[in-house]
Image 1: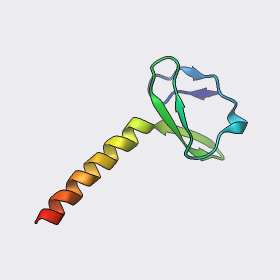
Image 2 (image 1 turned 180 degrees about the vertical axis):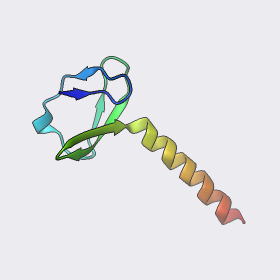
Image 3 (image 1 turned 120 degrees about the horizontal axis):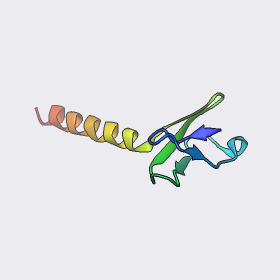
Image 4 (image 1 turned 180 degrees about the horizontal axis):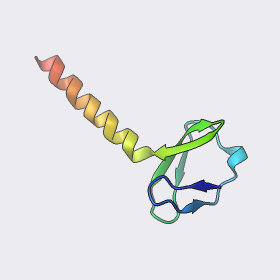
Length: 66
């Protein structure tokens, strides 16, 4: 059984068919969840990844400017 990393709702997904990097959409809250591991199966919020990428990009841009 998989649960949404944002709202904890049960996701109706065949776990055996998932691949690392695949993005799922929660039917309950609409959040995107990325498969970060398949053995053991692990999901994380895809929105968190995007926020981290944006923060890193801003810091890198500031360093390049100096």
